[in-house]
Length: 491
Image: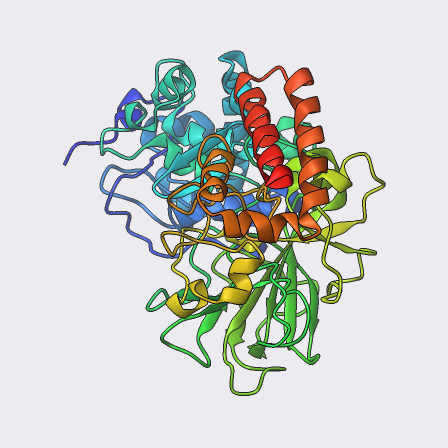
């Protein structure tokens, strides 16, 4: 087996993607805090240990501890013996805090912080690169000619692999969205980051056997289910009742109640996003609990929907982000204050264009599809419901939208989709326009509904973006949006 390239480089490198690692368990955030890790860094440090080791881990190359310090690096940050290092969680935490600070300085000197705000996609997942992504990626080393440096120069995940073939993009994605201001000294810049502004789920939320979507977000289900608009995404799997439902994101439980739907809500560490898990058979966390992606929050049940076992998944995004996104925010449902967790199903929601420049509500309910860990299939029968099709819902390949970790720029309830059911590089608008031209009846239905006015507003907003946007891709997308708006309003 070839030893990891970065480990061979020595001084600043930790072990990464070297197998096997002796320990299977990670160190929890609570244990990190007990060992001296500042609470604000504990979730990130725990996430790092989940791919590295436990306090007493030593792999075949001598890389040791919860963060798998290879020998040269360990001696640099802990000159004493290996035994004293393994026996002292406090020493490991101290070493890792100093390591993070040094690597962040090196990363910024090399310009790697310029990657923050861009989107990285790899292995079926997409995330917006954050400060914590860079620090996590520095486990491959922050030298300019290392794997992270190659990604910085080329933007190609395939060219940024270590000696075992693991891409640094894996760690940029896994490390995204954590609070590391205790290392960098600053919060993440700006509420809106290019290409994505939220936290995708780090894993499937339930056992993956038969995992599928049974009901889409944003459609009026009056006559089919409970009356009104559906403010979540319904998921089921083959395990059914009692199947464990995982948080999927790090954060804090801000709501857990034995209400009609036996619900739990988790807020991410940056305060920009909340995730709701409804209809639980049982709740496994209490308000105030800190959770990690693998924490079980509820078990799948049918509370409030007798006989219909499923997970109703919700994603809420902070109001200032939605307002800043404007037309790109898609359709959303406002929540009037931070203590409100359930939106009004009787409202038809707000278009993204109407959010621009408005005084934002604290949170808005958005489509969870774009936050999933991977694309999931819809139950086939849901794709042929004529009532949903009339409302603009369509998934041509039967799968959820691409995981962009941001609200979908969907003027129609179901989203502007490319031919494969996901967002293409132009936002899928061109494909929507082609579909409309090919289906006069759809155009007529849309033109006769209130979407005619929405299309006009969307087109006008797009013209403004085309005039003012400095990014050519956005200008091109806006120009196509204008054309689509004209198609919608003139057919």
